[in-house]
Length: 380
Image (cartoon, rainbow, N blue to C red):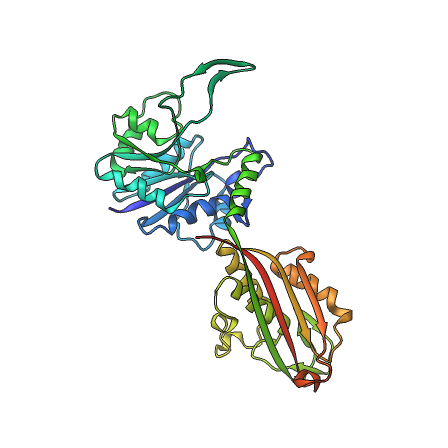
């Protein structure tokens, strides 16, 4: 069975306010829509993912989904149902998972629960029992509603593609349907109910964002990476340290610009996420990196950590040398490193020390640096 995930991300998010649609707002360092897409694009039973966006949202979507294999963006309509119709018209294959971008966390096992019933049913939807007292209300509380047998219906919802497409074409319910189960049941399709998940709570208001941030924080684990780099003096100055040009009669020898500060921090970040070392990503044997600015390496490592769902909390680097004196340049280096990493200056520490005349740094033969990076990573 070939399965396509259709992510509906065409809403304006007006109830949240602030102008930017909620699906493009940052949640734990990533746009909400990216989290919704990543949860499905990684699933082994999902062959492809397509995303429906609102007219004029193409640039926002392209930036939010950069690097993900989602195919051409689909332009949606005024109502959610219009966007789903537009998406279904672009799909092929056996089955579709229709999902709302405003539900950024989709557990892998839930997708398995949804796809299994398609052998016997036309569709399947995740549901949660209602535990609260229900009542009708306007400006005051009205009559109670019997909650026995009542469930909350979530997305993603799984359907055989052909029957769902036909059901939408024949929809005559008048008011625009709020989800696919309404359309399917009106067409007489059989829809299985599977156990839902609290992780699928929809983001609608500012308090929902706070709840989602808290939920995400509970899934993060602290990781620490250590980096070390050394370069010998060689040739004429100046020296590059932390992306800053430092006047000095002697330069540092290296394949790139020999920036020991940025190299050590790069290795620390890569190590924190178990992503190897700087030599694996930027091998010195590759002529492309000869004389390259090391801020390219650092920015790349930070992007890799964030792509893994990581949050960089702090980096600390100690430079070991007898010369040049870093005191006059320390604050500028700190600001530069923070800018490259997209961090607040308070999240970066730059220190300097000597080796009291001992070793190669003490003999003024070169400069060394060691760094520590603290990050939080999502649990898979």
